[in-house]
Length: 209
Image (cartoon, rainbow, N blue to C red; front, side, top):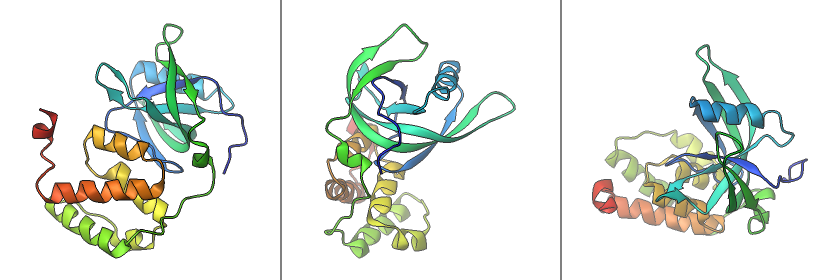
């Protein structure tokens, strides 16, 4: 669904390694750095209440991130904030703005991601039984647990996007999942990453060398 407000021409950026926000998904965040507490304070004063979640990449930032709207937040006694973001749209990073605030801002290019603001996608090619079988082996290998009943009931998009966000893939792999154009592309990549990991290819230290 399209938001009831116009997409802004400038958004604040929250660089966070290993965290991605898939289309129409939600993500909890724990904010404690002073500059990002300031970001939150400024964002809550705007109509759109949007933050650009983006991963660091090399000496800079990834070219694609996701703008999420703050739909819930709470403050702790020691000044931290617990924030819930709801994805509005991915964006392509264009111009960065520095110096006016303690955090980065950017001019986002929304033009390639119009379908992020439409109804949830379905994946006709999804073999749920095969995917969950792969996932079960992966979870056992990594000593992880999940709610299997919820996984079986989840809509295609919720299942694929949740796994893409939550499984302990590398930052680069998560970025590739985020940049997948459509849900079917993301599911194919997700299955490939799980299969790669099951064959012993997920040694993070070796992959980073």
